[in-house]
Image (cartoon, rainbow, N blue to C red; front, side, top):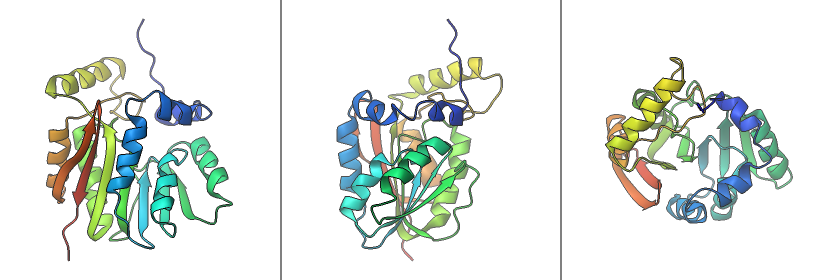
Length: 221
């Protein structure tokens, strides 16, 4: 039976109730990669964090444990996911600003953030789309700032190519990311795109099963 594709926002809106259980229980190495993401998170008092594809805010628990006075801007295409995040953090006195929208289209500004964070969100897009996004992220980070990307990755070029071929057969010409479908890149290709976007000190700091954590730093002033 041919797989039916769902638009990205509709996919996540329809799954908001079971999302956290799925993320923590059904994805290989989830407890490990959430812990290791926070281990690699810069701990700067009062730091400004941009969270791409923040969902219900699973990773924000760790952010505020590490830096209680952090200021977080979270952006997501799912209004229902953001609603659940808001309900959880609204009475905790945390500084959280939520943006309902497509982070590919959003203007992040110039040198506004100390850290950009993304957990299991960017593995739906083509290299050229990621390239444009990474340029914007490099621009929005302060000098010395860090982009920390925890994501599903392809084990090799063959797996990467197979994912994009499968998407092309199903998507009726819509760009990768329009529908919910996994199109992961290899670690090597992700690192190349980050370097081409201007990041320095790009490296894979952790990898297990099909998840890797990439750290990319903007040059100091």
